[in-house]
Amino acid sequence: MKKFSCDCGNRLFFHNNHCLACLREVSWCPVCNTLTAFEVSESGLSCARCKSSLWKCANRINYEVCNRSVLAPETPSGELLCDCCVYNKTIPDLGEPGNLERWRELEKAKRQLFYGLNSLGLPHGPGISDDAHGLSFHFKDDETSPKAFWRSIGKKERVFTGHDNGKITIHVREADTVTREKLRVDLGEGHRTLIGHFRHEIGHYYWDLLIGPNEEMLRGFVGLFGDHNADYAEALDRYYKEGASANWQNGFISAYATMHPWEDWAETFAFYLNVVDVMETVNCSELIQMPVPGDFKGLIDLYARFGILMNELNRAMGLIDFLPAVIPPTVLDKLEFVHAVVEKASSTNGA
Ligand SMILES: [Zn+2]
Ligand SMILES: [Zn+2]
Ligand SMILES: [Zn+2]
Ligand SMILES: [Zn+2]
Image 1 (tube, rainbow, N blue to C red):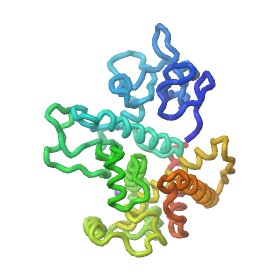
Image 2: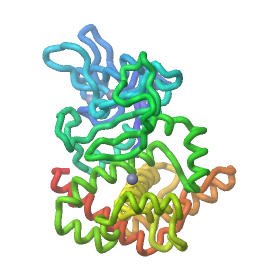
Image 3: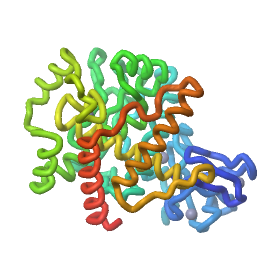
Image 4: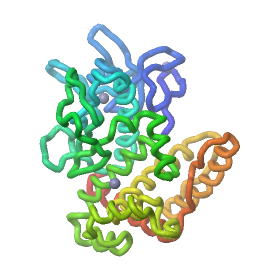
């Protein structure tokens, strides 16, 4: 994540709604592509930097779950959703106590996801079409209340976080810190975070978009990750019965990655997005000067060195490790493949 500042000079953070120095409302301006302050005049709101007329995202006006804005339309009518909220097809049942707060956390993670995808120039479609393969987000809980405006599942149906043909479902309970941490411990995971879920599931979306339909990519994929035609249901069943193979650390980024080549890809892709975000943040910090080299392996090497420092800092504070595993050569090769796929997609996307 880059560093942001208000027009008054004060430091801003990605999820800020207000500047604590000049007290103005701030927003992500879709023209400046950064956080800026709002200017308020009789004709409405405008960006303090580029002076474009802006509207607040409808999810900010109605629920305060968003901090973005949209360009004011020429003929004003109704309300508009920003370039992140427009991908929501199912929002949590707001009749359920606590779900507004959970939704706010989910939106924060989703905005962070889109920030990363846009920085890398990865395509993700407009989010407003009814294209069968289009990207969409569904935030669902196992149970519905009769008051809810989400009634798409039956009372007894269970919701699983996952991806299906562009549809990304995130279980609303994952936004509860206690529930999520319990799951992390029960499943023996190094990390379990909302942004991690988004980065993993979007990995499946990009497999469908960039690997599956491309013979050359597919050959490269199978060579590194294995045969994706392996029976998925069988693999899932085996993983939950027997767990990961012994010494999985030698070839995989996480235990879950051992389950099936698709999960290995999604876990590796999520790790790649973590690395990119962390190294951008490190590079923009004033405290640590770390030259970011042009070569990818050099970047991973810096990340690993930085990870060791972060582990020490976390241990000093009694927190869980920042970087739970070393990165073995096999995983490095897989990461390099992800990097090549992303580079190719972003150049085709005109970034
Ligand atoms: Zn300010
Ligand atoms: Zn602007
Ligand atoms: Zn929004
Ligand atoms: Zn997955």
